[in-house]
Length: 216
Image (cartoon, rainbow, N blue to C red; front, side, top):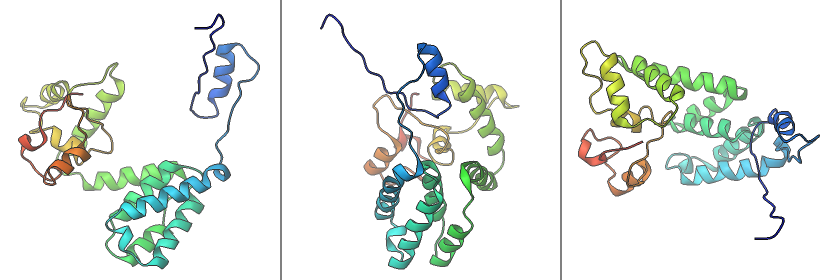
């Protein structure tokens, strides 16, 4: 340790945080690197190309369509990786090149429209009382002051259900239908992807023993 130790911090966030940070640190201006569309356009193209190579569906489309996907997504991304990621997930649902082109041409503009589109599409796939269950889970996870365990979520659903039975095998939907909204952490550290590599039947299986117990 030196007599005058120096600690350097890098804070990642929206540009609006700059004023709050400057005020908190009582300085006129904090050195800032602004990430713009022009600065990360090359990274977004590499991100798209890498995802196409890893996709069993997109890597099989014609070279012409691959070029269209890269160009249209990178041109409309406005520097947002999350927009590209959500759009790629939309393309993976298509099973023909014409359907992929149609999805590209009708892609929502901006992140707000994309999120609205994704949530609307997702709500149409929910069956029975899944929408009520999802809303309940999201409300608790969002407002809780600590990460909730599967046992706690299961207890919440049981208390909320008229008959006190909750949902049978809650972990399954959290790893499949609701996987975009929740992140499950097991005591052994294995992710859903790693479990799938160990047993390809895990993602579609209803056998609780295949997935194992999960602790938040």
